Length: 183
Image (tube, rainbow, N blue to C red; front, side, top):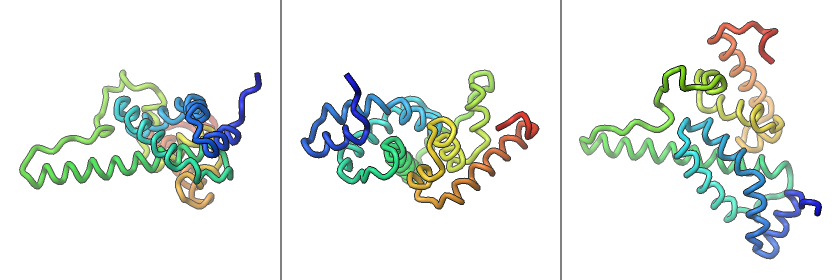
């Protein structure tokens, strides 16, 4: 049996509130979403929680998927927004604790693990700021086009290209990698 395309599954899920079709979409793309959020947050448990929030938001907003671009690009936009909202909430929570005289809680993802615990990709991504890391992961790990990344982040394609270039340069400089060694 031939598997339905993402667009066909979205149509089924929207037209008949078909949770099975939506479940198929989630199973198909959940590893991309979770890995993306893990790279952004640096915290597996937080990434899994954020992914669940992302999937719930996707179900609520599924009818807004226009079919323009890929479904995974649309999902990563929701994941990125979910991540940013979580960061804002975490920051506000820390500010409330601090103003109440409590010890501030370190935000997850800001911890530094010993180098031997990090894989090469994590070490490379660690030198990037949050925005650069998100865009590089969308491009290289998730395989999104510059246009899809622009749609997911609400940035012009030229800005996406500049951030990717700047991020790669930052990695090259930090790790003293020659241009011919790094794509």
